[in-house]
Length: 310
Image (cartoon, rainbow, N blue to C red):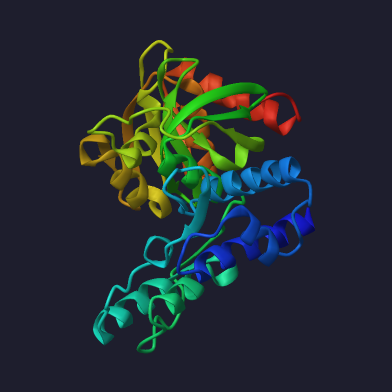
């Protein structure tokens, strides 16, 4: 595995560094670790490497080396590979610096990206307003969204097949949202609840709707489901009131308390999503009614506390 990773890196560098397409024989002479001497094995291994790089988004170009089309050459055009200069002025770089330092990603990835765009400018934010963890699966999911590739993954002991429309962040959790093929309906899945690594299908497997709003699918996950519709009344304390009202809208508020808490009513047709929504609010929310929905949530929480199935 280590040898192959090294060869992929060196292959990328070799194809970037040439001004003309290189034949497979020339590539085999320049790239270390070496490809097999036997021609069929060499071709097979190179094709695997080429396909891997393309799956990672590396734009390998194939050209004909002779007038008969009998031999092919390969290269990576720098203009296709590198991010073009954004020509940001000092004020724009300073604004980016403030944004990156105000919301920090685990591992400092934002600062690395800022350096590639022209470096830090100004003082940045004095303190971080938020610290965001980066789930290991997030890059895989973003790649599937960008390539319009379907995903297969295990979610709560059930295999799901999803056409991903977007990856969004809500209440500190990452979600992948899209069309659930098994249920023929839109769904949102919390990334940290996906078991293992999703299997990504071939690119261009689906076309997302023109009016799709991935953020709205996370703001309104309770409206996507097959359960009997019910209006849930939830009390949210002052520390989470603004977040919930911003998510559901002012029309959902039916009562405002003197201490800043609010009571909201929202339609629920997906009780699993509703339970997860309540759990995300921890002890900052209480389901007031209707009684059967409250009892359902209480029983589910007790099962979690007892170590039972969720």
